[in-house]
Length: 172
Image 1 (cartoon, helix red, strand yellow):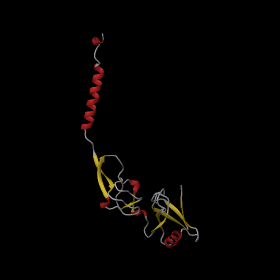
Image 2: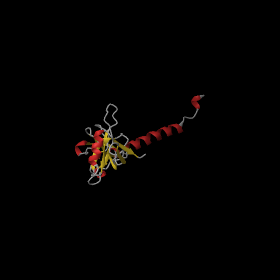
Image 3: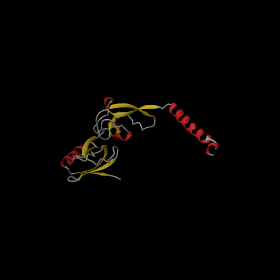
């Protein structure tokens, strides 16, 4: 006598309510805002110009927007990669009068990090600021990044770096 049982009205009402809620959710519209993506490869330490940025519409809140006032690439950016705040550093990172010198650095050395620079042969010791992290390319022997140093020791740091006798200490 299964044909005499009551139909499942409650389940039908729940199914209709779910479908209506999904329809209303879809119709309410999405707020999309433009987010920056690299339109071409950008090398670490180079300025990011308008021609290097492609703006794509994504839902609001999809990612954080970087500060584009005098932007400098903090690391290498591949074409099509989103430009996040961690990939951009401002040019004000280098104090006035200081010089940026290429030195061996690990990829984990974040721009803006204070470092201690020691010359193994000359006994040189000075403080610096990481400007661009080293490469994390497994196929490259080059791990060169760059640090900013005071002008009175810039030449000595460059000579030690070129000789391969420069040690950069990064605090944990």
